[in-house]
Image (cartoon, rainbow over all chains, first blue to last red; front, side, top):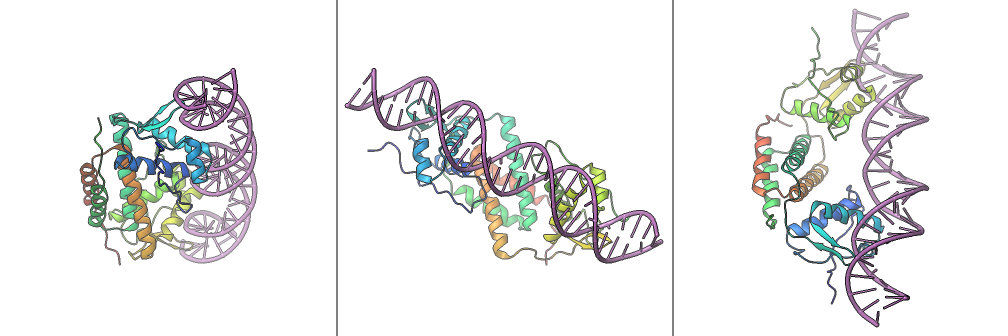
Length: 136
Length: 136
DNA sequence: ACCTCTGTACTGTGTGCACTAGTACAGTAA
DNA sequence: TTACTGTACTAGTGCACACAGTACAGAGGT
């Protein structure tokens, strides 16, 4: 019985995001929604790379980012595991990046001439559909 | 009496966005909010470039993008003017880009572990504060 | 001890994109 | 003619990204 689950990640070639970012986003979302539970082991760097048909370095880079953000923790020689929730960024850094995200989204809404109500409703719908885990 | 106003645009060196995008976002936002009214003439490519201390090509590129999106219209040898509102993108293209914007923002919210309610409230606040012009 | 798995680190290489720079051309108006 | 307008083109630079190869250290089974 394998301790790692298949991790139904898919790399979309048409996606504008870099491969490593697609991996980061995918895994982070699965942790946030609880699909990947606390303590679960992730596929190995080389294993996931082979499964996705990409370079192991790309997977390692994604894992390193997730570890730095506090989503994963590594045990030398053992593997990577889903880490317990904790505050990962400083309040200033968090606030700054959130401001940037808001500004970017507002700019997109204006550029596409989307109705404000529609945009708000859509964001509300997307976010309420997620089950968030508690942070420490 | 100059037909072009000063256009209080500022280029932030600390901004992660490329210079041309800062110009596009800035002008587009000013048009959307009505600060730049229909028919107003914009500063010349070389004039704005000198004012901002950047390359004229960068300004030309930004203007070209705004023209392609339908925010501006150019009259050969005369200058660039704020264009009348009209539908600029196809429904599919619009929907696709909006989906991408929503996905990107949701990913940021998850990554920063921001509460859904807080994110929705913030977007609502930012968007309601803008006065949108009517599109055709 | 040996082997095989794990993560991590490092040096290159190639590609694509954004930005800058310079030059040239076409239209408008005094 | 002169001076302004936008536009088009080439070339160079810097950077992020993905890939390739190699190497090292820790954990665990044989």
